[in-house]
Length: 125
View 1 (cartoon, helix red, strand yellow):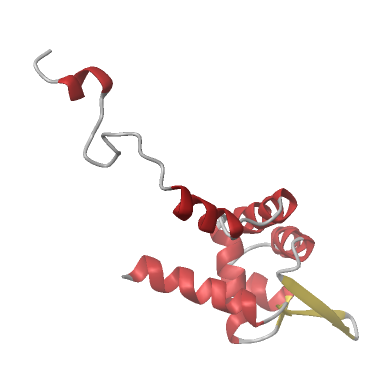
View 2 (tube, rainbow, N blue to C red):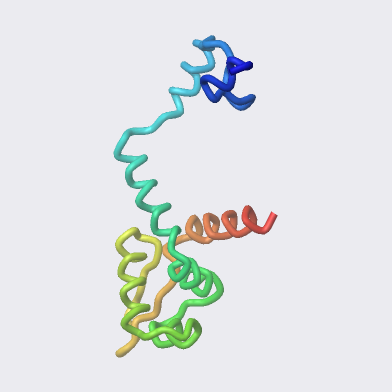
């Protein structure tokens, strides 16, 4: 081995010395939230990891829709759509209201719209 980097597989993307910047670490640690918050956040982002759920949220970002409408728009069974909507409801990303015999779904709040919009902008860059 000619190079010490080859032995330890160290690239240019890591520090080549161990020097902790105590003030920076202290300032950054102040921004950390509780473990429960990070667990909830992780669960929320996990929901965004499914293309079908993303499609459903994209539809609902345009207009409130019932299960029949979503099913038609995505060429999916109502049962499959309902399953995904239950998952989204469980994370408080969508809500519904009954209108007669139909349940109309919408995104829970503007934050869900913003997360979706920012994610789409990021991947389209």
